Structure formats: structure tokens, C-alpha cells
Amino acid sequence: MSDNFPALSADTLAAANLVGAWLAQDDFSTLAQKPPFEVVVLAGNAVIPTIDAACRLAAEAEVPLLISGGIGHSTSFLYEAVRNDPRYGSLSVAGRAEAHILADIAHQYWHIPRERIVAEARSTNCGENARFSREVLEAEGLAHRVGVVIQDPTMQRRTMATFARVWQGEDPLPRWYSYPGYVPQLHNTAESGLAFSGAAQGLWPVGRYLALLLGELPRLQDSLQGYGPLGKDFIAHVDTPPQIVSAWHQLREDSLLTHALGDRTLG
Image (cartoon, rainbow, N blue to C red; front, top):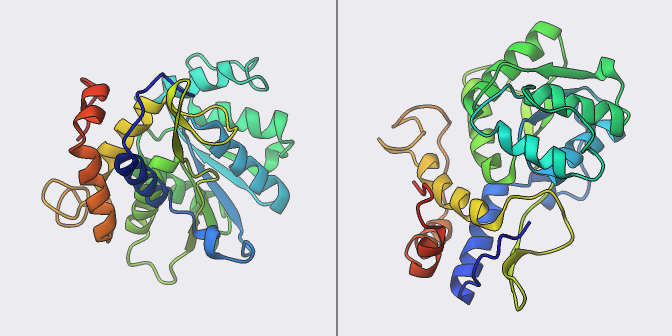
């Protein structure tokens, strides 16, 4: 989706794409083929290509699909995305937990049997997605020695660090593969300014996506202000490469970008 966001300089555009791809953390991108896995965990989000990828993966592998998501501060974005989708628009969404909406998509449109879908409808944030997913996996006796975690690409790396924190100290540790299903890339257009590349539908407005990128890096820091062990201790330590830090500063210091984002929360 485009919201007529102004074109960016070449350096800032490259920085946005670098940060976006790093946050998306696609573990499968370097593998010749996907490894065997026992479960797919989909964290509730509003990115339709990511939701589709999770359903496709679970359907093709014929493994359980655990969907984690209650009603939180971003649930309204899922309601809007489903209403606007030409396939899913007839589904009831108002007042429903994310997990129940996504379970309907998985069953009705991707033909995953109900008995292979597990809905965790209490979680309202990333930390609860991981913690409650573990509780459900263990309570239901679902095998999870190897699994795949799928989340909004802007939150994928943080979600993996949250899963690592929740299982910290366990022996043996589950092997969680990170798979966003979609890695966003932006480009400048002559007609409408900044837009997503490719034909994917059901994405963020461009301005919201950029605000999410800017707000995510501070959360991943292992500092008093960050979410790492030295700060709020919500996530395991994340090593942020120097080029990602530099790219984030390029975004933060671009006056056109920060002006265009206006009053959006960036930190």
C-alpha cells in the first residue's frame, strides 16, 4: 500500500531497505531447501503476505499451525487488512481475537484441518506471544524440537530474540527458524513517490512501515533503555551489525524523512 509518501534520497532509500531486510531475518534465504520442522508458529499481525506464507508453509508440510494473538493495540490494523483483502473480506472481524480471525483464514481459505490449528488468543504483545506459545505447546503436547516462527517482518528479529529469552536455559533448546514470509523493499516512483516493490498487497502504509523501522532499533538495544538483558530483559541479546546502526542513523537524521513522518512515534 502507498500513502503518497515523498521520494527518498538514494542513500536514505538504501538505508531503509538494509534495515528492513535485517529486521525481517529470513533464516531460509541462505538454505538450499527448507529443513524438516514439526510446527509453525504464527504471531498475530496485519501483513497479509506474511499470514499467507505461514498458512502455505503449514499446509504444505502438514504440521500443526499455532496462531498466537489476542486483542492488542495493533489489532485494528488486522481488522482493516482483512476487510480490504479481496479473498478474506467477508470474514467477521469486529471484536475478535487475532488468533481466531487467522484460524478462520487458515481453515476456510488454506484448507488446514481444524484439528491441526491451535489458537492462543490471550497474548497482547510480542513477549506474551512467545511465553503463551510455549505454554500452549507444552500443554497440548505438540512436538517443537524444530519449528518455524513467522511474524510481521518489522518485528521478526525481535520476536526471535523473545523466543530465545523464553526458552533460555532449557536443555535441549528447541531450534526455531525465523521466516517472515515476505521481505519488504522500497523504491521511488515517478507517479506516487515512495512505494513497495513487487505486486504484494495487504502491506503497511509506507509511512507506517518507515515509522516501525525507526522505532524498532532502539528496542533491540542491550542497554538500560533497550529490551535486552541489560535493560528491560524482554529479549535475549541481539548483536546489531555496525552497518545496520549506520543505516538507522541515516534514516533518523534525514530531515525530509522525519518531517514527512510528522508526529509519528519514532523511538
